[in-house]
Image: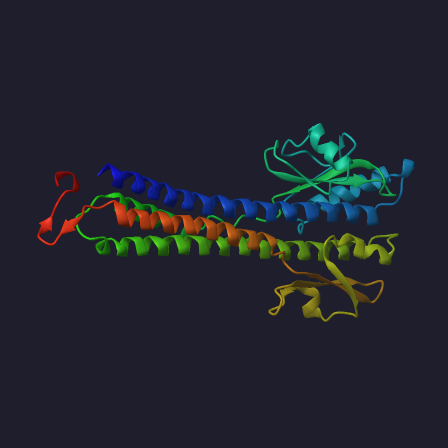
Length: 334
């Protein structure tokens, strides 16, 4: 009996580990996609300020215009999530989540050339990017964005499949009399529950990745259109706002294209047309959602699913009583 308990316990631990591994992998990859979107939008906000705000003293920005433009951007209805901006140690926007003071370790990374860092010390997780001087040679402050893309997991299906997998695990842990074939339906149902759990988690992360691309392109469209009509802005600098997005000049868009953001069926790319009235045309913004996170998630889900399958097979094969042709015999009574 004891020889059967050890593999059975190992099988149960493998199944629980598979469920936890699927959840943890999906949450990790999704959080990285959300951090990436936060950092990209924070960088685009800095680029917007660089394009719109006139030069000021000491190779910096006009202080009054920088403050006014930053507050206009932070209050804009199209800006997703939160935004913070600091010039040196002086916050230009209200610090609503307790970002300041930013740890020196994070500021040091930005000063050394890091494109972005993640701050976890505030009330909300935020992505910080450097605010550089006009020559982009020295760091004079930082910008931060957070909560730009909502989470898609867990869904009600994710919770349901997880509960079902645990219930099936408990059912397999109960010793029963009879051949292993009688327990195979429970093991098969457990495999199906794990597969559905992994599929739902993957779909959730994919939805977050696609939503992040749509949010980025839609926000960049509005930023460029705002900058295109600002006084003193050179139209040739507008593409600099579109951080990480392909930009192509186009003719005057029709009213339908100018008002919407759409997804191309063939590539999944998110596309928008940002009107530039002073040039009589538009800038086409295109962003293909990154797939590196999904590919890594597929690998992690496959590894977790394999561990869960092994655990279910161990449970089906070991946590039972054996039976002979003449009746059922408890293994310890033989």
